[in-house]
Length: 210
Image 1 (tube, helix red, strand yellow):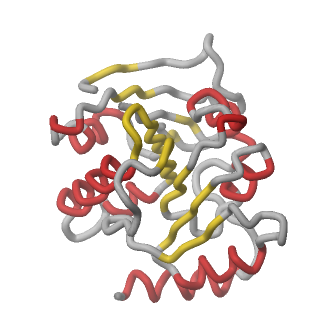
Image 2 (cartoon, rainbow, N blue to C red):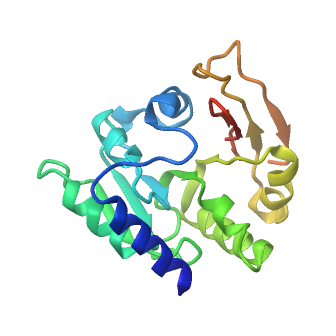
Image 3 (cartoon, one colour):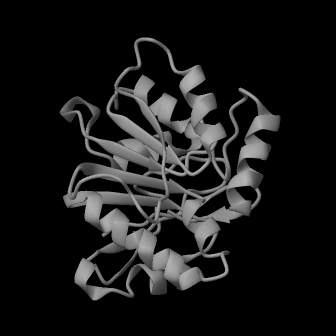
C-alpha cells in the first residue's frame, strides 16, 4: 500500500518529535472537557489515526487514562510505544485500519478523529471509504457515545457523509472555536441536523470543524 509506505517514511523522518495537524492539545483541551465523559468515570477513548500527535499522551496526563490510539502506519505505532512511559500501561498504541477496526461492538465511550476523515475523503473512492469508516465508528461506540471529529471542511461538506445512513440515528452538532481562543458557551456557534456529534474549530490561519 503506497499510502502506508508514505506515512511510514514521513514518520521515520520526523523521529520522536510530536506533530499535530490543524490544532494541538492546548487548543482542543476545553473541547475535550466539554464533550468527553468526565475523566473520573474512566471512559474508554479511541483516537483514530493519531500519527505523531501528542493528544493520546496529553489525554492520559489530564486523567483520561484508558486511551487506545490506532494508526495504519507501523512506524507511527513504534515511535509512540517508544515514547510511552512505564506508568502509562493503560495507554495503548495499535496498528490498525480505521475502516476495519479490530474491536468488539460498543466498547468505547468516545471516538476522536483529527484529520483522519479528511484523508479518507481524499482517496480514490471517497464515499466508500467514508461510509466504511463511519460504520465502524458507529459499531464500536457505546449507545449514547460521542464521536468528536476535527476537520478542515465545514458542515455543508461533512453533513452529507455523516447523515447518509439514517440507521445510525446520529445527532450532529457543529461548533466553532474562534481564532486565538478556546471554546466557551458564549462563543460557540452550533448547527443541528439529523441525529450524534461532530464539532468545529478554527486554526489561527485556516478553519477547522468539529
